[in-house]
Image (tube, rainbow, N blue to C red):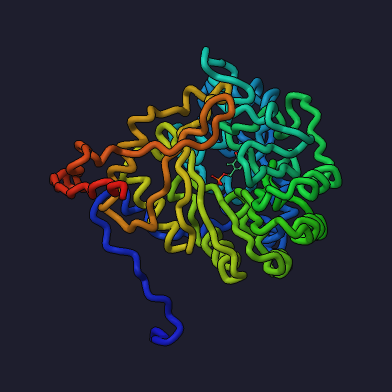
Length: 399
Ligand SMILES: *Cc1c(COP(=O)(O)O)cnc(C)c1O
């Protein structure tokens, strides 16, 4: 008999089209690693130690690796290391070379080709870096980089020049110098801690950094950018949450691109963070054959809301060297936003942005809902294409 009090209600709608199959939060479990103990599997350090980093490990689990992937793993590794946590690896469909998870973490030989307009530092971070590990581009907020390591490496990483140490870029952040910079700049009211992935640091380092920054009077707002909740949900344990909850207002931005990434393990980790009082946002990158269609994106953003995560940004893929094969047109991005606005919850709709090449900052790109606008009226179209007129308010006449 079903226990009517504790049984979880299945709120998954009945399927009506193929993307609906992506709606449930599936439990990933041990998959390829079925012989490992539960204790090891749930231990984030075990997950890190046992990442898939070599071609032979990959081939043992994905027999039909494509030639582009095989040569990609060997060559691309010299630019940005391959590393995939066992947990995340289990999301890969070994039979589908176009698997949206596979595209994000398994290198392809195309990564070694740089298109004319592509760059190693596409958003000009190095030139707005006053101190190693700090990017100060905007008037009131900074990027505070704390590590060059991630749990897994996204193949389109905008910071691949310094992440994973594959290129020999000597990135060693000096926390004291960075903290001192913040202390000396009273205009900084918002510190975005990123990397690399800050949640890879030990709890004591995270605690130290947050307490130092919180101790600076003019720092009002702290945030962390991390993909750990997606790549390594085991890391989001009680001890970490106990630390994070001491430093409010603290926001966290996660990075999910495809609904498959939102598993029951991930949902659980995100709920722990939300229960610790941390408002959660998501940043997605628009990627070819991963999430460049309205149906997939709609399921993604709706699942994010179910995990108490507010979609924040959708990025047009930065012009990072070797990313052409993953890039979709700006027009596709606009179409996706048009396909969401009005058709689903306003809370589910991210802001589509281009991080302007060379360092201009995140610039919003929106579908055009204004048909015409003059001093008498504005003519607008709604999400269904219907036309409406709104009278323009006359400019105040001078007395
Ligand atoms: C993205 C970014 C920020 C934060 O931008 P928001 O739009 O406030 O989220 C700050 N500094 C740098 C250098 C960035 O790239």
